[in-house]
Image 1: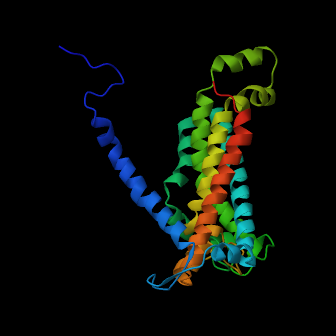
Image 2: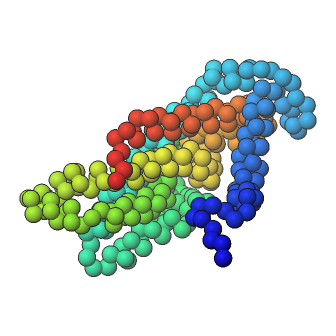
Image 3: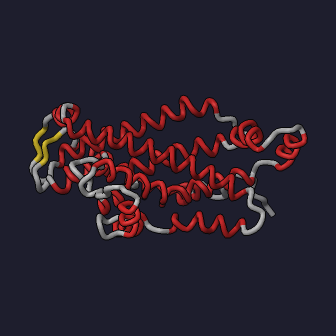
Length: 296
């Protein structure tokens, strides 16, 4: 009876058959739309997408000189940076605190994880009602504390609200991965450090955090991608990009220009620039930060 060697498929076509569904999904939902957006970015497209006029790089030149696009770029950077920093810091803090709890540890972890099960659109509606000016429960608490709360009229408050909502949603994801990373640290290392006289802070600084570096790097990349691409529903439902464009991120501007203003050529050029920005940012993260990550 013949035996198949490990790693060798019995049929030469089987690997291609197994890869076919994923390749088809990637082709239909990523490669094809990206190619269409790249082509459309060099055209001035009519409102129904039928008439097209080749304009070369004019769409990109207009965008780079557009104050609204530059404003959305800075809004996106502030939103992404604040959200990633807060969500990762709080996720690590709560994971460390929950890891030190001896009784009811599973309950604490369950309570931290349940926000991740809430869809972003539902979470956005809940927070919109909670902090609705004058009528929301959260708004009443803030007003009682002396805060003149009206995020529909105040751009800073609108930005703080969407940042807080996004952090609340993303916190569970970071908490889950940091918890898994903490459980993978050998207890003997911490016990040896304790016997050597290291306190909790020194153990965290010299042992725990360096060993969590791969997890931290992974979460930094994933949090950045999440804020850039997966927060459209939060912005759309809570603020609609307002007030006065204070929360209009690049993704939301692409939607507004493409689907509301029907400026398809400009929207396609914006999507290409957004993809270049995210790719560059991810490459910088791999180039600069991964050097300091030590995999065991």
